[in-house]
Amino acid sequence: MELGPIWISLRLASVTVVVLMLLGTPLAWWLAFTHSRSRAVIEALVALPLVLPPTVLGFYLLILLGPAGSIGSFWVEITGTTLTFSFTGLVIASVIYSFPFAVQPLQTAFEGIGRAPLEAAATLGATPLDTFLRVASPLALRGYLSAIVLGFAHTLGEFGVVLMVGGNIPGVTKVISIAIYEQVETLSYAQAHYLSAGLLTFSFVVLLGVYVINRRIPINRF
Amino acid sequence: MATLSLHIDLRLDDFVLSVTENLQLEDVTVLFGPSGAGKTTLLRIIAGLESRAVGRIALNDAIWQDREPRQFIPPHLRSLGYVFQDGRLFPHLSVEKNLRFAERRATRSDALTLTEVTTALDLTPLLQRNPTSLSAGEQQRVAIGRALLRNPALMLMDEPLSALDAKRKAEIIPYIARLPQEFGIPVLYVTHNVEEVTRLATRVILLAQGQIAAYGDAIEVLERIDLEPLAGHLETGAVLEGRATAHLNGMTTLSVAGQDLRIPGTSVAPGNILRLRVQARDVALATQPLQGLSIRNILRARILSIDLVEEIFAEVLLDVGGQHLRARITREAVDDLQLAIGQEVYALIKSVAIDRDLLT
Image (cartoon, rainbow over all chains, first blue to last red; front, side):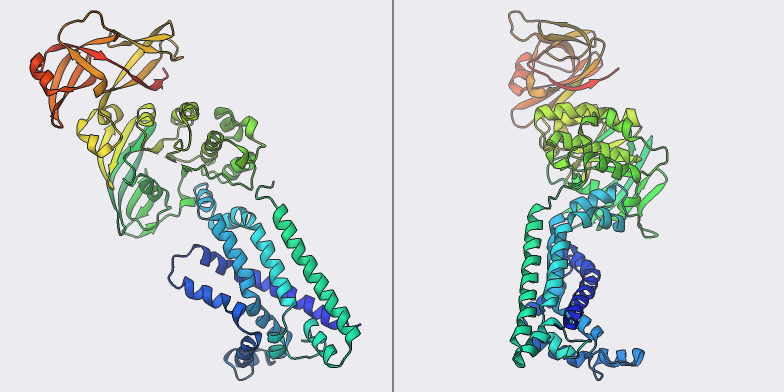
């Protein structure tokens, strides 16, 4: 059995989740607490990948990240390599594609916390960062768990965007879903079964875990 | 004594708050007024939680906010403690960890210890508990302890007792009353409850429609009849102070300016001073000593002034050996009895509210 696609998929999902948390946390925080009128616009933009066909997203990303695109040409200039059909390009595409799955649980968690505990922490002398780390983050733990698992699983399961942006380069951009597609095309059903059943089981177990843990984690724990 | 200097304006669509005053903070200063007067907003502005307000705020030498040059010290850098109406304990931390959270971030090096605070507020049995398992009263006691452990130069309290029933309230009030003396921290206390005002206040700020309507010594502000329409819940009346002299048959005898006043129950020890609030409508007047009355409390008094209020009433201000008492009677009665300023009368007191146990 080919292990390459599994390894690439896991690596892609892990890197994507890390980037998602780093970018998603401040954006979710802003969305949860801002009074700005542009909030609705940003929320709609973040949610776009939920409704767009992956091919539409992949198409524009291909143009944007390609050597002729604004981001792609800049990337070529500073690194000498192209973004499309590379692992980095896949990460960028995956982050955009999975963004709502990370931002929305975090935003909901932050909104659920509200300003009250944050104000209390401030009047007790906690700096904003201190408040975030010691009060907001622990209270948003469920939101983080959902965001991490959903972001990870959703990235594992993507197909259209990856195919458009990353293509099918063994050892570089060939992820599980694409390997399955290729095996079915070449009528290697046994191989396709291994990967498909594996992905199915993995996804189910992960989602089951999230729902079970979400019920079990009490808000109060010390 | 700490001075809190305020010169602030907040203009919102439907509300304007404008306060300019130098507050001398001694013991407990109560910020009093009807709902919607802006009490909580003012407290939040002082704490730096309402950044839309413009102007100047300074506690002694520390400038917290200023207009020129523009300056805004964020809440976590202001030396204050804040007790919210709803406690706001951190639900993910135990009671002890909630307290440690504040202790670790204390503003002064001569910080109070956790032991001192837990002892003073009787929190020791609660330390390992989960805040959500505490009663509302216990939560507020922990919240007060947590704010104290920050060791602030000023304690702000926003209706900390409003969620509690009368019994719980009575349990916590003595703790709050003791704070300024015991820990040397002045308190600015928001309430719309007149009982809390008279029990706790050394000075009172009456806030109405975003403006200070009156500021001064608690007894003086509480006696002013012109404030009644502004204060909403505040029935006109006066505050008497008396020293407990004896208990008999479940009643306590108080000596008020050399005259005896008998009040029900109370566990006050002889020698202690009680503060009583007597509402004007609970006082009747007689020109001669009366016999055969169920009313036991009759004080000799002298009329200081007679003010006509509303359509048919008159409010009579009385002097009882240097203390004041108010009686609300009809204008007809004033005419029939031919009451005049300087006249000696007998004040019949139907009931009293015990407001403050002033420890001596």
